[in-house]
Length: 212
Length: 222
Image (cartoon, rainbow over all chains, first blue to last red; front, top):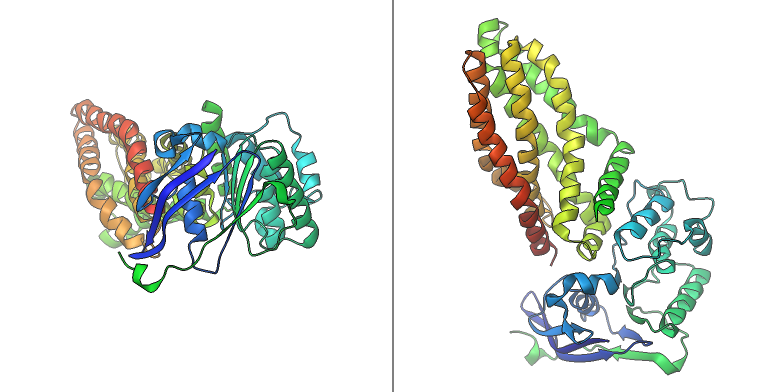
């Protein structure tokens, strides 16, 4: 269970959001929505522990994430704006790197994974020579062999084609059905069954709340 | 845990071999700087062998400085640095692997090429052994210290000059002890003491620097 209590985020002395409370239970997909610059990415960065909050805390399985970094990161898969794909390495080498450095199933055949994300035939070309969408697919390939329970995805659908969007959606739903948690931001309308789908709409702070 | 270390080193070496100018440029720079001295100062062998240790060390220092920017910059740009910070393995362990890879790519070639340059500068054989030894022990310290500076400046758009300002003063002790060791060797004295002092610095750097690098990265990224 991912939880945050009284989370306040301040960037450049401006309040982005104040006293945000949030609970995401296993099996749920949380879709964070809101206009540009409202603090969606900042919220995700706080949830991962990459940046620290002005006040408030994030809890994973009832414990503060700052007190249990390594356990938390065994369960966390984060995909940011920057995909973490190394440009000089091929799709296969990138996947091998992900598999060895982050909690993953080790018995998965990476060629099968590349087949699933539609990169077979490109496995020996350095990522730099692939298109933006294909590079994104390399980053998303992780989801087919990760063992992480919590997925935090910042705009995962950027530069993907319709087919890839569809298969990513299926992948997210499957993960939730298996008891995983997904937190994502996107401007895309998602066709995810109602049951476990939650939305959080962030709104701009009013002027009097703006400064600290 | 050890596999992870090897994986990081392997990945970095592989990426560097696909991008060869990044490896070769610092070495060319090193060779050119060292060869400029005989051209500028004349070819008097006694003068050259006297200034040789200092010249080679300063050139190695500058070459290292030139290559540091690559250490975390690419990872910062493509997001793998962020990913590394979210890895279940300790960040200090992962950055040590990166520093080792960087040392293998930039300082090891300098070590290998130094016999040739020692001949250029008519360095005696005893002094040359001492020089190689100080380079072997001293350059890892430089890499570790430099990595702290790189970690602090990685988020800045033009951190290059700031990096030199942070890094060069910190390298003064290494420079002093290394050149003193070589001078002692050249005049036939025992130089073990200086080398052991350098080795002590190396042990200190290996044990403490990774934590400083990790902490600096966390500050830079958030």
